[in-house]
Length: 236
Image 1: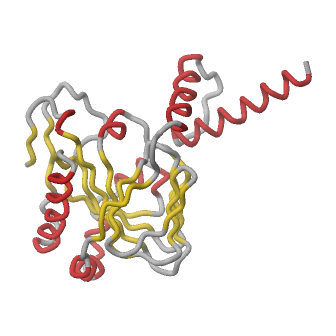
Image 2: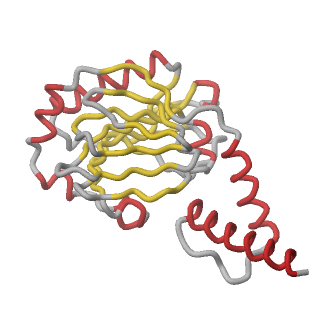
């Protein structure tokens, strides 16, 4: 009986931690069997995924880096939605290039919204990277944005497991960083260098910690494979 109670306590504590990692907020007092099953299924699927990081190439981002470091700070302050909606990202600022809702019904046409407030030269260089990724990985861009992680900032361990993330190929391109920014996925830890482009598996548990003295800026690009674009695709 004592062993059974200990196992129940361990399972309960593990479930509480999994819930926080996946949902991003404390577990409800009365967790239903359906919700419990959902969390365990995500956990099991997560353990069996095939990769953590896939290196694609190193882009020459020297000119883009120079422009991003000199962009007026008001651009970074324009949209605080990501930080306010997701407390995991409170140590970041986001500068959107294209937008598509994360919660979507894939039976409807895909309409992506282009944010045209970025300086034209930055837009051009960003679109060149995106076009290469679209051609190489046979798909179209949905969300793309620049994310700044502050010096000393942390993106805590979490998982992104909604349908959107199960289908897109997510790429991160390092624009500016330092040797003390540690990106963890599963059991793998890497340090991005300027220009590095990795496909990342954010449907596994992942986290980032910037222990350096400077901010980190990455370009994040989500490519939806053509096989999932069942209806028309429009960017406007």
